[in-house]
Image (tube, rainbow, N blue to C red; front, side, top):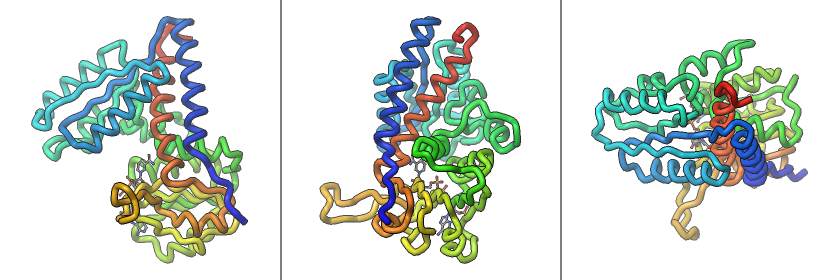
Length: 294
Ligand code: NDP
C-alpha cells in the first residue's frame, strides 16, 4: 500500500482562496477590512522571516496588516502599553506576538494581555481553558492544531470513534490538537517523553499526530497499516548534498511511513502551510464578530 499524500500546500491554497472571497464579501457588505497586527520584539532572523511571511499572506487575501517592530531592550511595561494600544485600535481584529520573546519579558504576562477578542493565535489562557472544556467553544483555536484538523477533515478522514494518538503535549501543538480530536469524538492517547513503549502505543493509532521535534523518530514499523499520519515536526538535518547544507524532515520517517500508512502529510508541504492559512481564517472570523458585520 502507498499512502495517499495529504497535500497541505494545495489545501492551504484552497483555504486562502476561500478567505480572499469572504474578505471581499465582508468589505462590500459592511465596509470592514479585517486587520492583523504582528508584534516583533528584537532582531531574530527566523522571527523576522515568519512575520514577513504572515504580512505577505495577509496582503494576498486582502487582510490589512499592521507591523509593530520593537527593540529587544523594550521593557515589559512598555510592551504592555503597545499591546494595549492594539487592543483599543478598532481597525485591528487580530494581534499576534511573535514568539519567542527576549528572556527578560514574561511571555505568559504578554500573551494574557492580548484582548481575548483579538487573540488570533489562540494562546490566551481563557481561550485555551475554553478549548479544554466540554461545550465551551473558544473564541479562537490555535493555528497549527486547527490546521491539523482541517487536513484530516478536508481529506475525508473519519475522526469520530477512532483511536487518535498524539505525540507531544506542548501548549502550542500537542495539547490543543489532543483537545480538538477529543471534541470530535476520537478516543485519545497523548504521549510524551516519559511514555513507556512508544512504538507499541503508536501502533494502535488509527490517526497519528506527531509533534515532538525529533527528526524521523517515528519509523515505518510503528505505524498501523492504513493509519492517517499528520506530521507536525519541522527539523533541520545536515545534508551536504543540499544547496543550503541542510534539509527539512518531519518527526516521521516519510519513506518508511509511506509504505504502510493510509494517508500521510509530507514535510515540508504538509502542516506548515496550514498554520498561516488558519491565522488568516482566525483574523477573518474575528472581523466578522464586529457588530454590524453580519
Ligand atoms: P516542544 O518541544 O514544545 O514539545 C515537544 C513535545 O514532544 C513534548 O511534549 C515532549 O515531551 C515530547 N517529546 C520530545 N521528545 C520525545 C521523545 N523522544 N519521545 C516522546 N515524546 C517526546 O515542541 P512543539 O510542540 O513546539 O513542536 C513540535 C514540533 O512541531 C517541532 O518540530 C516544531 O518545529 C514543529 N512545529 C511545527 C509547526 C508548523 O507550523 N508545522 C508549528 C509549531 C511547531 P515532554 O512534555 O515530556 O517534554
